[in-house]
Length: 439
Image (cartoon, rainbow, N blue to C red; front, side, top):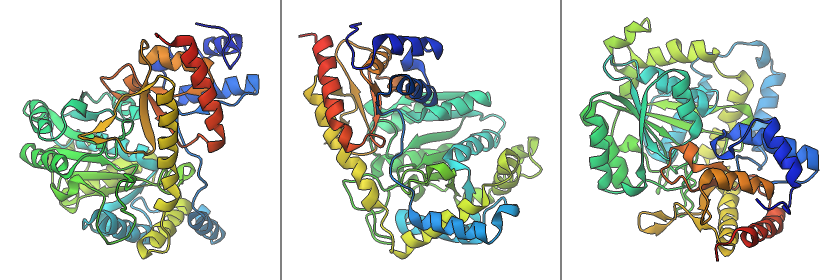
C-alpha cells in the first residue's frame, strides 16, 4: 500500500482500527458510513461517497401534507395498523396506473419502509407450510435482506442470476423449487446492485414456477419505473413497470418511497399483497397466528407486533404524493432521471482510469444508466479494492455482501455524488491507477 494517498494514510489506518474494520469488503453499508463519517470528521476532507444514498430533497407535496396533518392533531392519535383510507385508496390507484394490475384497497398496507415489509414477508411466508421454511434469493440483492433472515433464523438459498438469463432461468429455478422446501422467492427489479432488469419472459417464468410449486414471490420494487430506457412516467398509459403480478397471484410487492420520492427519512413504503393471496387460507399458519387467513395473519399477526403500524403523519404525506402522481400533476421521474445522467458520467471516469464494469450487460443490451453500477480493477478482489479506495477518498460496498458470485467487484451508488465532485473523483481514480496499474 502506497502512503502518498489523497486522504492521510495514518488517519485512515487509525480509523479502520478504531472501527474494528480489518476488511471493508466484509462490512455492512451502515458500518462503512460510520467509518467514512469518522474519517471526514478527523481530516476535514470530503469523500466521494458511493456506499448509500440519497441527495435529492424530499418531494414538497408530501412535506406540506405532513405538516398539515400534524397541525390537525394526528401526532396524538394511534394510526390504524392497516393504514389510513386515503393512502390505501391511492396505493391501489398507483399499482393500477404504473403496473397495470388490480388490487383491492384492503390488500394495500403501509409499512415502516420496505425494510419492515421484507421482514414481515419473510416471517409470514415461511410459516404458511410446515414443510416450506426457506427463502430463495435471486442474487445479487440487497444485503440487509439476508441479515433479516439470519436474525430470524430463517434458512435461505441463493444463486447469482447473471449467467441464467432468459430461458436458462427456468431450469435453474426448478433445481431449487423441486426440492420442496422453498416458501418464497425474492429479487429486486431493477436490480440492486447490478441494475439488470428482468424481461417479461423472465417474469413469466418466475410466475409460472411460483404457480406450479405454490411459492410466494416477493418483488422488491425499490426502483420502480427507474429503467430510464423507457418512459414509464405517465399514469394509466403503457409502457408499465414490468412485474411478476402479470403471471401469478402468489405475490407480494415491496414499493419504497425512498428513491422515487426521496422520502427516505420518513420510513414509509407500500406493501401490496395480491387479492388472491390476501384471502387464501393456510391451516399451518395457526401454529403461530390466531387465523389461517394469510392477509389477516400478515396485518394483525405480523405487522402489528412489529411496530403497531407506521407513523401517522408520513401516511398523509405519501397519500398526497401518490394522489399527485396518480392525477398526473406530479411527474416524479423528471427528478430521479438525474441519477441516470450521473451514472453515465461516473462510469466513463472509471473506465478511463483502468476500471471495468462488472455487470455490463442486460442480456444483449448494455446495462442501463441508473441508481447503481458495478466496477472492478485488475488484480484486486472486492475486499482489497474497497479497503484501498478508502485511502483514496472513495467509498463503496463489496458485491460479495450482495450475494454476487463476482467477488472482485464493488457497487457504486450514484445518488450522494454531487456533479461538483466529478473532478475529485477523476483525480483520485487517476492517482489510484498510477499507483496500481499492472501495465
